[in-house]
Image (cartoon, rainbow, N blue to C red; front, side, top):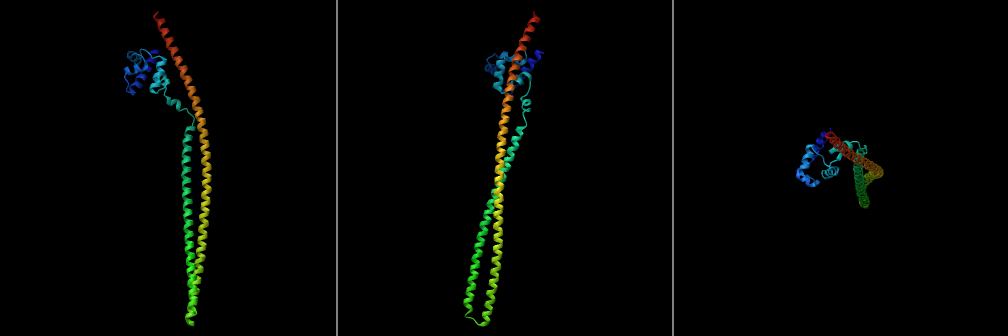
Length: 253
């Protein structure tokens, strides 16, 4: 039983050493032992001390559980709480909110441009109205110098111009006011949604930070528990080796 354990440990040490393209001589220098001792360890004929095992794990970024028992660190990580996936979800929601906020800002900008355009259009319409009014005045001035028939004709022209001017003014005022009111309404709605999204984003950020802190605490506690288990496993392993050595000596005696 002990021989099988040592062989398995030796295979895992050799596997990690070869994956890093390290020779037995280099590993022996790093651990302060002879290359022959490394060779015997990888063959299962002897074993490294607990100090050397810990140093090996530190050098090649592996766990003592894997070297001694063959347990992967993934089995421990798979038991972590599901809040980690929630952090990713919250981050995606945050990006969505930021995207919506950018979209609303663009709508507000377009509404502002539309208001400016309608304001310019209204100003130009007012100028046209003034021009028509001036034409009316000119026609009135000319009316006093014309014959009766021409006077009636000019009066008809004046009436047509006045009617056209009145209709145009009503249409422009109505459409401009409605457009400006609609643009203002959309701008207010966009600003209200933007404030709501800002508040939601802030609440999500606070919730995420709180969950991250809780998760870090849990991970720290689990790491401390794992380190305690590793320590006691190492002690148990040493005790097992000592007892096995004693039993072997007693058998030979």
